[in-house]
Image 1 (tube, one colour):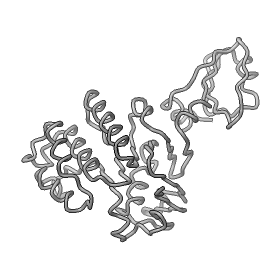
Image 2: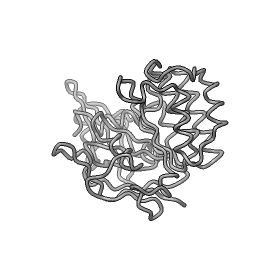
Image 3: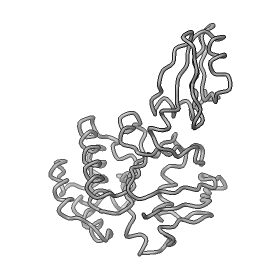
Image 4: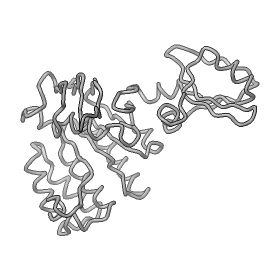
Amino acid sequence: MSKLTAREIVKTYAGRDVLRKVSLELESGKIYGLIGRNGAGKTTLLSVLTAQNPATAGTVELDGMQVWENPEALEHLCFSRELNQMAGSGVATMKVKEYLQIAAAYYAHWDGEMAKRLVGEFGIDVKKRIGKLSKGMLSMVTIIVAMASKADFTILDEPVSGLDVIAREHFYRMLLDEYNETGRTFVISTHIIEEAADVFEEVIILDDGRILLKENTQELLDRAYHISGHEEDVARAVQGLTVCHEERLGRSRGVTVLLSPGQELSCDCSVNVQKVSLQKLFTALCGEERV
C-alpha cells in the first residue's frame, strides 16, 4: 500500500506561519475530503504535498522517497488547481488544446483518450483561450487534467467551483467510477461540503494551519449530535461530554457534542437529540461561535 506522508510541515509567508507543524498520512485507495475555512492553509498544504511549493520546514515522502525535486515520486502525483485567468499569467493566453498538450507532456501516465472523451462530455471548445472561459468551463478543464493524469495520488482544489448542480453530480459520479475502476487515491478540497460528504471516505479538517482531525467520515458523524431543549435539561444531558458549539435563545439551549470513541449518549426524553451533518459539525468545530 502506497503512502504519501507529510512530517512536521511548516510554511511561512512574510513572517506568518500558514502551516504549523502539519503531519499527515494519506493511504492509497481512498477518497479524502479536505475542508477548512478560507485562509486555513488548504491550498498551501496541497501544493506542498505535491512539491509545487517548498516547505519552510518538514518533509514530504512518497513510500519513503523525498517528493521535492524527485521525478520518480512526482510522476505519481497530480495537483489540479483553479486556473488563473488574469492577463499576464501565461496560462490565460493559452488555448485549451495547448494547455492539455502541456499536461500530456508533464504527466507520465496521461490518458489522451480519456481527456478527449471528457472534452466532448463537457462540451469544451478546445480552440478557446483559457482567459475567455467561464468559471464553470475552467473547473471542467481542471477536472479533465486531474482525471486524465491517471496519477496514483490525485488532488483537486475546489473542482466544482462554478459548476451547476447537474455538472457537479456528473463529476461525483465520474470520480466514483474512476475510483472503483482504478483504486486511485483522490483528495478533494471543497467548500461545498454537504453534497460531497457521501463521497469522502475520510475527512480532514484544517483549522488555522493545523490538522484539527482526520477520521473516517461515517465514524465521525456517528459520534456527533445536536442536543436542544430547556437550559437545565440540556446542561444535565451534556454533563461530561465534549461540547463543540452552543447557542441560546431565552431559556432554551442547543449544543453540538462530539463523543469520544466508545462513549455513548444517554439522554432522557426531556431533550431533543438529532444527528449532525458534516457541514454542521464543521461549522461547530471551526465557526466563530465555537466553544
